[in-house]
Length: 352
Ligand code: NAD
Image (cartoon, rainbow, N blue to C red; front, side):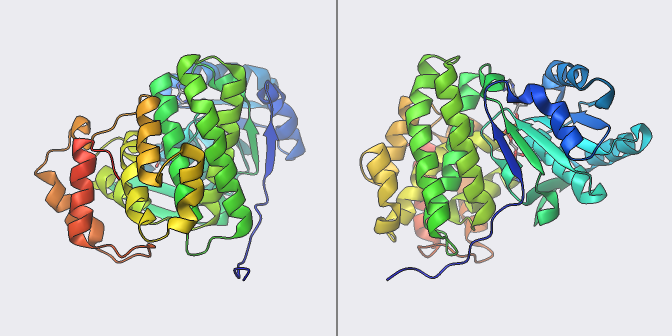
């Protein structure tokens, strides 16, 4: 019998193609805007400056303080810069951190956003905004933060370091894998998930071999879009919760944590919903957890939590935190199996 579902489309425009970011000024015009504030991290300020030059008199300058986990004090400085420069739209160039800054400004000012993603995080197509203040991360979901235009230009990702490409892609794959068993899943989003996983499965080994391979880069960015669409459309479960716990309480790096945990969390849930996770097994070849583990190893991803500075003694507290605040998951969240899962992930053991 066909599953009942609801589906909500996103009101944004997606532009995909090599060199497409050079037309950013046209998109500013199409939005009816006149002056765009360019956002970057300090590491990408040169690219941001080039982009501002390309915008010419449509540029309101570059704000280059974007940082991991969207600190509120940075956002407040950026909002001040918007006021001082009279910017009437934002162009975020970078990964999830820069996109997060754009969303945080839009949340406070309602300014339209153009995002040019240079990693595979996928934040540019979600209504989710995580922010940090006084060392505490909070997450909100609001359609107001969805960027109006996303320009995927694979040529800007040719230099994304291989290690970051790998962890960022595994982070994206986690959105797709969890989307397959989401309680509010629907057939369209499941198609995005499968297509996104297939794109990553084919692109990532090619990127590891030839980081500047334009075709593989294009495919990975296409996969990142689809995986991001899954994250934006349906609920996430155990995997995202555990990664959030580890990142929030033990400060483990975001993308590395996702990369290490993915085979274990998917392996845990595959026991409960084998039919929903069957596409993962088919795409990566094997049982879902083991197949993802083998793939991650093949592309050189980190495989053990102990390498992220987490001590074995932390695992008890991590397990306690992970089972607090009940949330929906296809398999019950029970402390002993979760503690065992964390031990496996800490040691880097291959799931079954
Ligand atoms: P990031 O944006 O923090 O980027 C990491 C570093 O890589 C930065 O210094 C950045 O400038 C640099 N970089 C980015 N692209 C590059 C390129 N092509 N070449 C060279 N350097 C490049 O990392 P990320 O993994 O993209 O994003 C992580 C953040 O995004 C986390 O805070 C996470 O919570 C958030 N996120 C949010 C959502 C959402 O829907 N709200 C989704 C996914 C991730």
